[in-house]
Image 1 (cartoon, helix red, strand yellow):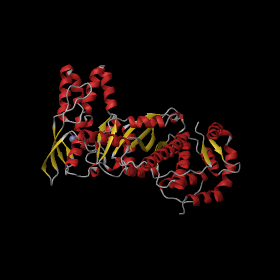
Image 2 (cartoon, rainbow, N blue to C red; image 1 turned 30 degrees about the vertical axis):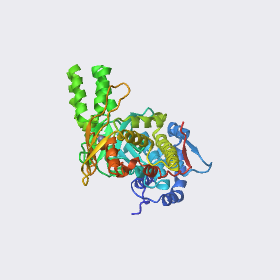
Image 3 (tube, rainbow, N blue to C red; image 1 turned 60 degrees about the horizontal axis):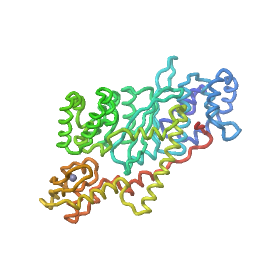
Image 4 (cartoon, rainbow, N blue to C red; image 1 turned 120 degrees about the vertical axis):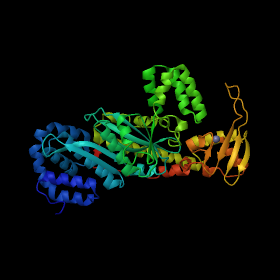
Length: 480
Ligand SMILES: [Zn+2]
């Protein structure tokens, strides 16, 4: 049977929308069909039903501006559905379908939209449950970012009291790169597992991804599900969240700061020293932290999975980008993410162009780090142990530090073949430490291949090369 052949206009339209959401329906054909066959009939139905649906229509009109005064196909369609199906959540689903499909199919192919429905109280009907969306440019961009995402949830204050879930990656200059969104009912195990499954399937098929988040039970479960458990995925906790939980329980700022320093230590011996000192002050505090697996929060036990991303501040800072969004209707929220991301990509693209024009090879933060490390490398003494395997011992030079009596005089083992240094900084951040730079300098080896590619300006340019395309302006949502 042809997909356009059915009995009632409402069920026919819903079938069209649901098919256009799940497959590559040609929207031009769909619209032509609707104009020819459905609009005249809908007009009558709308006139008969407008009055009893007055409230919803008023709300709807408040949100949408008509570009031209003539018959508006989308509005007619929506109004028709409104008149036939009097469930607010169903209307929501419909409106989302229209807007997101226009974004996806007409203008931005590759954008992913997935949603779930649930059974309504009224028998045989379904209601909106949750929606996931990731714009095509973000999906493309993530391929050039380090394999880490930070995820977080934030409550919505609008008519729909749901939760907005956000996944963000970071570019080579440690700036956020929003990857995916979802509106769900609440942060349940089911919601988080679904969100993470969508990310895994549609956005980040590459394995060995690290996820930084708070210790929400829903996420813990999600990270044990298919595709996210090690060795495919690694869960790391946000240090800021853990420190805040600790502070609530122990109410000791000094101890909290001391543990924060321990968590950021890159060497296990230094970490142990700090934890021992904390244990002598408050053994229960130490036990509280050590009851959580060390790799989840202590950088020196991380095994280079989080690349220095220790908090979900990234997603929090994206919440700032979404300022004012949380009280919007969901459809307007989707639109807002689209326009804000377009603007953000555009700004970041210009920033990359400026860096390239200036002949900058590495991103700002990496430039700084490399210069600092190169300066320290000048004071190191290198001995070759196996030139072929690239094994060196590097003794750090003595130097005075402001506020400290003495520093240096340590010996580190550099293994270029295994890309490791006993100080662990190289493995943890993907940027050669001063010891590695000293060894490279000593043997006249180019250090550039030892810097992770996502820190290059030319790679960052690739992150922001994908472009958003304007959505048809027939449907315009006011972003109040
Ligand atoms: Zn080192």
